[in-house]
Image 1 (cartoon, rainbow, N blue to C red):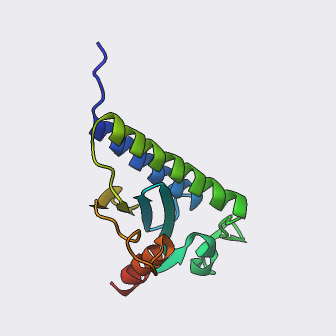
Image 2 (image 1 turned 180 degrees about the vertical axis):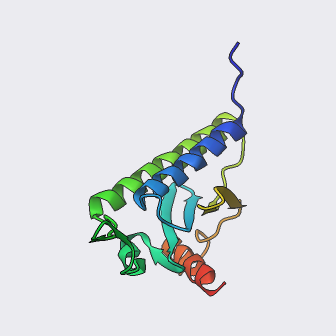
Image 3 (image 1 turned 90 degrees about the horizontal axis):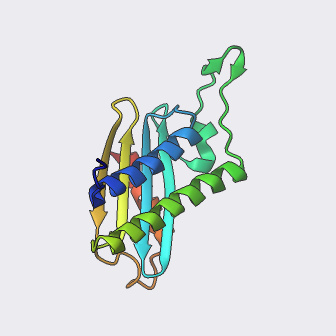
Length: 158
């Protein structure tokens, strides 16, 4: 007998997949992963930043946080931040966000306008914050990138 999946199972699985792809991107070498998702009418946004060696870095700046003493064998630890890898992470994240929206429609649930996920790598613990009101659509100045960067700065300060 197959147990039918409930909405929460799909929602959790898709978020876990977002974390997995981001974890793979940093080759499991980060302290924390911060995933930003946004959906406001007809616009999906997905981005991520990391805490590595106690420094907060955007996905394209991972190597700024590399400690020169981090070595595997004799080779300095370098992350592959090629555009192809960055785009792959963003594409998969966006696909998962679209799938979350599809599940919300299918199960009659409200789609969050904003999802902020914090994954603590060492403790393997995921926390999410969700908003359902419009964050930037009603604002002439604010863009999703601005919200993402504000969150990045907020986490750096704390």
